[in-house]
Length: 281
Image 1: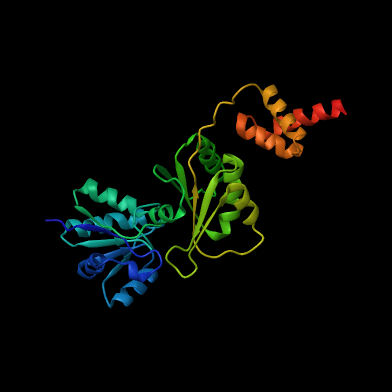
Image 2 (image 1 turned 90 degrees about the vertical axis):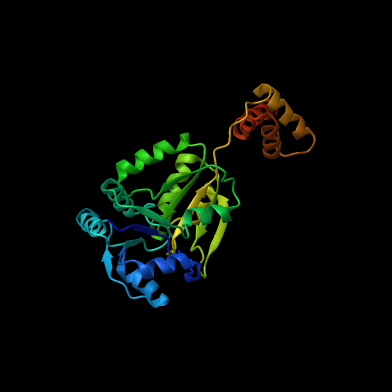
């Protein structure tokens, strides 16, 4: 009878978030498959657990996967862990899980912390429906292809990003999606945890590569809102702005208020309004 692959969630920062069931599973498994054995050793030392470790990561998964499956088929049990959070999410562990299913090896979940869900929960944005986009690749053609698909996505989107790539990613997202509301979530459950609610334009301006950043980031971009059809004609909106100017508002503020009430863009109202003012002058 084959053993079982246990997919074990580990803390994303605070070691106190490890569940008693996860700790028991790590202690009882015959061996542990870890993304980075150095990281996992620190967790095991904290728990006073000594257990054989096997490295399983992006660069050795094709060679190591069959070895792990063979041990499972021989009756051993294995706990699969990643450096932080749930394995197999933006993680090579998904290949091992798939190999086990195909080989008839039982796969069991030992749920734990997840940066995706945690970041969504503390963002305060509308997250009833969301799409997890993972990391934007550094490969330029694939990155362009991924970015080109984003404007059609209507759900809230979640991205992971490393600190040295944050500026470029925010710039690309702002250029692709426009100025949507977003949250920049940093270092979840750690000492320097922060949730910054902002917009893509403001975030791209702030995180422009001028300072060296630390920590891991989750970017949450709020769902695409349906554009309302403009009410009335554009000329009526310009006339409304003209009436506001006569009441004492500046041309810019009048155009802004007329845009809000009509659904037309402030820029096009302002242009026609000021052109009319120039002719009148």
